Image (cartoon, rainbow, N blue to C red; front, side, top):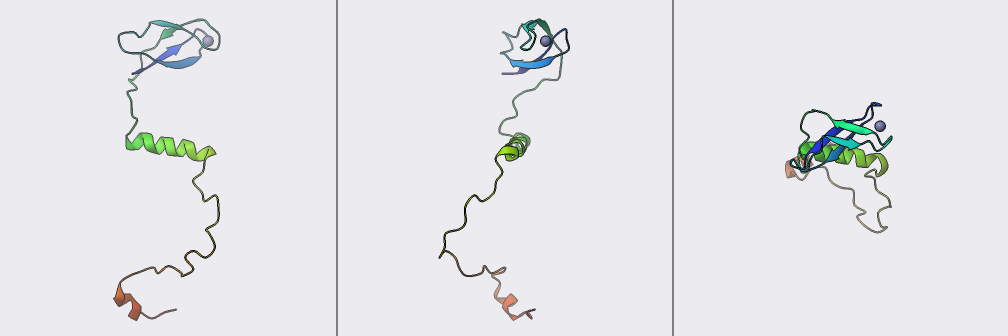
Length: 96
Ligand SMILES: [Zn+2]
């Protein structure tokens, strides 16, 4: 459902979602309770699922839920250092 933008006489802007056939011209302001007129603004259609939405969502989520390792690797796991390359020709290259 599209989002509609409203603005109360005191200047508070808020958004509400209605179906296109049920969108009211006025709505009570959530902060002061006065009648707020619907504003004409750019349509804010659903962007969920798009790359833009995923980027915004992960950015907002990382503010309070950073994607970091929360525990150490279990001991006795992979002890071998990982190789950077698997190309056998790179084995012949001089080492530092
Ligand atoms: Zn208000």
